Image (cartoon, rainbow, N blue to C red; front, side, top):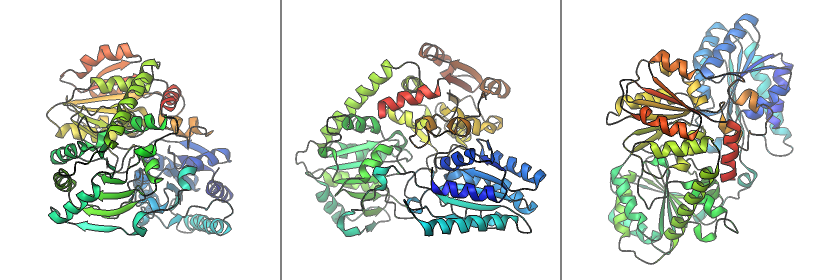
Length: 564
């Protein structure tokens, strides 16, 4: 149990806080775990906007302080309407938001925003608690103790009002937290800036530096489709010393690209001796936004003598892999097209691409075998869905395990794929997909969502904006499947009470579909899913919704069996 969670809970309880309204999230789970073990009454509400208003109602009647606890990212932003109400009604709400360590802000990490002080205009005071150091940290504990006490006293002084305590919490695995810092080139990051194309001489110089025997890995995060970039990367991927890692949200398509990054890395990691040294890149070219693959990020961060070149226009220096040496501030499509042309004369042999292509094929085979021998679960359901979606459909994915399953199981045979990965919150996924379906008129837009995401954005069904081109699949496994899977949360006592859907709650999808004019389908096995898919996918005068029922605990078990 984290020391900051114990400290925070003890002080709140000593000051008379008797009620806490919490919302699910991995980063705040240690705080929630301690609250549940205390004498404070804890209630779980998935939607932070609703949670804050519920806390407001309790404070209104009792005139006592009520704690609000949420995870990092956009979660705390959803508190704003109720907090502004509390501010002008002088009601003491104690907002506690978990946050990443400050060093990871603006570094393409999920659920990470500039969170400290985000409610500054509608609270009496904002506090930012630093992470406590491992072991004895008496100065750190004294600092946090003082700030928490000050926050409570400020909330209860006349006129009363809300305060915001932002708590930096580390969830890094032991292997990652002990990484030594080894940036190449003595820590110097150079910048290359161009309004459009780089100078030819500069690009030729880079091409010589990236030619074989250098092993080059292009890692593409989320970005919109870019035909020029796709063509340029296809040329680069034909070079024997280059491999392109293209998750589906990168919207890149080519048989030479590695689309299922985790399965390819899994194939290498399960070999005797683990991932071979020969698989390590000398240079990583990073494109787009954050990547989904946590195993790839962990692996790249621990490599020695790996140089990273970041390409794109960013507001800050982004060093996700901890080895950035060059920032190329220009359009990725333009730069990669220039680089691909400059690389063509360099034809020295290399087996680097072949090594990764073999790993990708083996990973695909291992995954297919795991799916085939598994009983009905989310991984099998997602495998079927991925194979059945027409290529010209626009694919929208909710956050959590849904986007990770699709990233694992896809083969790059889709037209367009998106997810709210800028902040990686579960709020608004359904509304975003409905908006996308209004704009994408060439074919249907399908949203594949988890039940917790669907429950969070339930008001989207009442938007009045759904067209017949909107299709929605909801994986109903009891909510919060990622909390069953994540090493951070799966063994917590509060996982079933405060991290998944409220016990006994059934998401009323059939009733919602009937009430808001969607055709409704349901499947709880592979045969039923395949037999009903045709009608679900067919053109219709109505939007359509399909509920797919699986078991959350079994889902996590089967995914863990493959990836761990």
